Length: 388
Image (cartoon, rainbow, N blue to C red; front, side, top):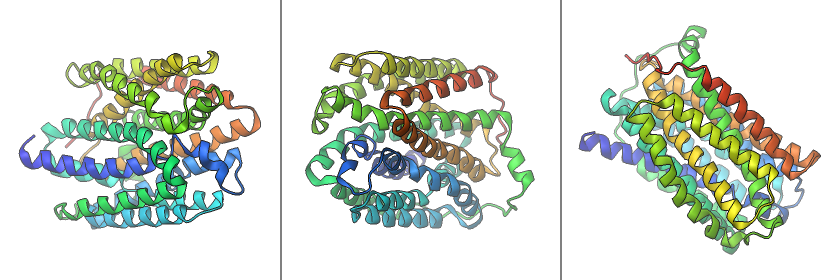
């Protein structure tokens, strides 16, 4: 990439990472601290974790389409403003129902597809895979940092303080977007059935299902794992970093060979199958083993290796597969699938926890991962691209 492309990719990754950091910081603490709100139930805990995924899922396609029509930058400001409003509502809440409402408003700022389409607009075809992989890596890094920072802030400032920090992050993201170049919208097209048919082909649908499954498993996992830490007396919530930090370091080392195999040696299908296999193993062992600090660290590291590898690979693969003329729409469907997975994972995971028990949530994640593995098994070894 040239210097302009590198700088723009960095800015996009900072906006994406800043926003995702704000969303992810709730994951390791919500199920533990939700008891401080009135009206709390396991189902509402799951909704507070995952409901932003529902509004994200509903609005990714409209945001992507409107960004094709009116420009990427104006839609980014609209989305970040909604995210800021939702953060303020949640920060002011004393009842978990208002936390759910605030999280839903946060999800209304559905700008992931717009950011990825903006990146594809300003980065050459030859360098697009690298740029997408770089952004995917930054999202993974933001996720890892959120696991360290979220418990520290929540233990000292409470959930309200955490939401105010998240509101501040959205303002930082707005300042970064202000520095983005203004790009003329692409040629207008109607949001028709034929437009959707172009992006709902088998190759792209496998990727959409992949990101759906990945984030469903993620949302379910973070209903269960923080509570397992407490129930098994493994580590206090404010000392989570003692577990997450080594897991993060191990996962970044472990994911490197998977990324190299996918990007350099073009073994994307094999890499995805291996990564999903690691997810299945980690979830099955979480379900069946008695947990100690050492076992939890090993299983968490396996989970993060797989998650980070897939999170980095999928946007790069999508950029090689989606056509240029409707990139915003394709990114919208992909991001819709991602956040719909988060919502369904949070809602169904919370419901399973409410009806059965905490450990039963892993049965859902194991089942979804096996189905996902079989879907990827049918993927051609060399994905055909529709790039123009």
